[in-house]
Amino acid sequence: MFISGKVAFVTGGANGIGLCYVKELLKNSAKGVTIADLDAKQGHKIVEELSKEYGKNRVIFVKVDVTNKKELNDGMKKTVETFKNLDIIINNAGIMNDAIWEKEIDINIKGSIHGCLLGMDEYIPKYKSSSEGVIVNISSTLGIEPCGGLPAYTATKHAIIGLSRSLAQLNNKNVKILTICPGPTATALLDDLFNKTPNTSLEKYSNVIKQQLASIKGMQEAPAVAEYVIKLIGDAKNGTIWVIENNEINEVIIPDKEGLLKKC
Image (cartoon, rainbow, N blue to C red; front, side, top):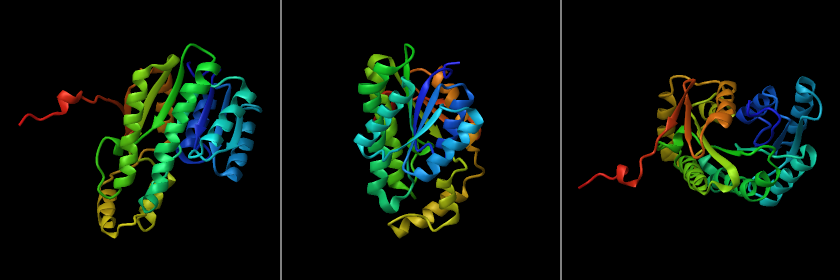
């Protein structure tokens, strides 16, 4: 019900689970959705396909590098010019490749920070169509547990949780902050790890990655994850963190500092 009539902006929305978020928003009667992605060819193709399926003038594509704040700003500006509102931002763009960990940090962390600050400071408070807007930051189950084979990627996903929890304390102008931590999901990110030499600049991590991949008993489907996320956008409370794994959803409760300390 919350999605109906709203306008959303999805980074990394031209492929994979990001595209599933876009489709689910449209299925739930979003007024408009912007796909923000670097892949212009795929983006325009998807807009054409979705316009046939869900109706014209409900989805647009903007070419955006999330590490570039100006490009993100221009994408959000185009969204408002097109749909007159902006209610929901899903910071989904990310990569999993520790061989290029500096770029991984730029996309996964810097891109999410840009999206949050622009959303909270510039766009959602001014252009939301109801009393509350929502920013969704996509982390991972690796945001709440270690992964020896992918230390840099794991660090970026831990950072997303810290970012979200901190911004949620501001309760800035009725902008709700949610964090989603999907478990292993059938996407290109995991396909690359299963089917190719692990992307790591440190060879000693390769065996660890292989062992951890071998322990995965099954993967959930991306459309099912998207259904849960769209439901949480309307139902979940500000500052909450959610794990979606094995087609189940659970809230993550992080103890305060005292609860984490072990007395010596």
